[in-house]
Image (cartoon, rainbow, N blue to C red; front, side, top):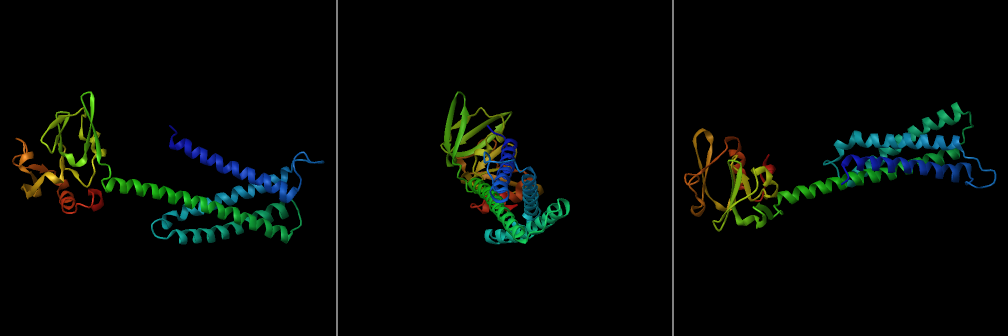
Length: 285
C-alpha cells in the first residue's frame, strides 16, 4: 500500500519532470531551432538553463499565490470565481516575475539586446503555462474536497447499514436496524438484537465497532452503552442535570429497568440527536 508521503513525492517528481521536459521542448523548438542529431547540433545549455529557471520561478510563484489565498477561496466562492481570481493573480504575478528575470538575466547579466517580439512571445507562453497549472491545482483541491464531502455524507446519512460482528469463530452480519443496543462490561462487548437475542462478541471495547454504527441511529450515552433510537421509550431528567433513558419494555434488563444514565456532558447533545433524527450528533456541534 502506498503511503501519503510516497504519493506526494510522486506528484512532486512528475511536476518537476514536466518542467524539465517543457524547458527542453521550448529551448529546441522556439529558441535554438535545432534538434538532437541535427548537423552542427550542440546542446543549448545556456538557453535551456534560462528557460528552466524561468519556469521554476514562475510555477513556484503560482503555487505560492494559491496556497496563500486558498483559505479565503474554499467555501466562500464558486468554482468560477476561484478560477477567474486565480487566473488574474497568476497572470499578473507571472508577467512581473518574467519581466524581472528576462531583463535581469538576458539584458543585464548576459548583455543581449532587448527584443520586444521575443519578450512578448515568451511572456504569453509563461502565462499560458501558469494558467494551465492553475487549472490542475484548483481541480485537485476541489476533487479532494468532493471526496471528503462524500465520505462525510456517507457517514452522516447512515448509509453504512451492514454491521459485521466477530462472534467466536463466526462473523455475523446485521442490519443496523436489527440491533437494540450494544453494551461493554468487564472488557466484553455484548449486543442485543430486536428479537431479544444476545450475542457475546470478540470485541474488547465499544470503540472497536463504533465506526460501523450509523450515527443517525445509534448514540453512545455513556462508556457502557450504544443504544438504537428505535428502542427508546422515553427520556426523563435526573439529578445534577443528568438524563435517564427508559427503553421499551422488551429490552429492559436488570440494569436498565430503572433507566440508563446519560453522561452529563453528553446530555444536551443527546437531546438534540433524539429530537432531530435526520441529523447525526456531530452536526449539532
